[in-house]
Length: 129
Image 1 (tube, rainbow, N blue to C red):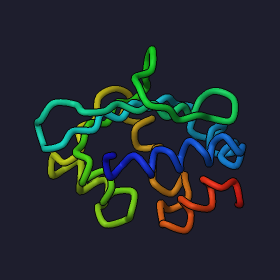
Image 2 (cartoon, rainbow, N blue to C red):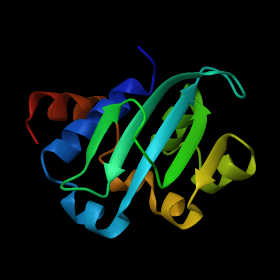
Image 3 (spheres, helix red, strand yellow):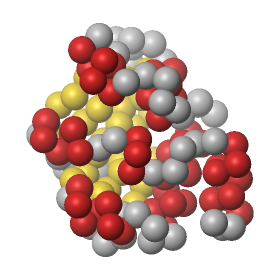
């Protein structure tokens, strides 16, 4: 399992509960995340985070279409969502590549979701929020 997988699962479980509905109304975008093992390496896994339809959703795989596509390493994604890597610095330093609508891309921030702490991952996994 990749380092980022528990975070994507946390986002999926969070959105399934309907707790992200207000953010979905604000963001109105579909995001694709392509995760690589190393910078410039091949994509090892793709994820879709739909912040446009219904209460939102997250799943493994590519969407039919996206508003913004983020490509980054597993380590950089994990550092970003844990608050150890600033999104703007990640982009400027080439640690995060973005394709598509930049306005929609900047609307996606780690603050939209619960922090991927072991406690939150367990809490949402068990449905005890």
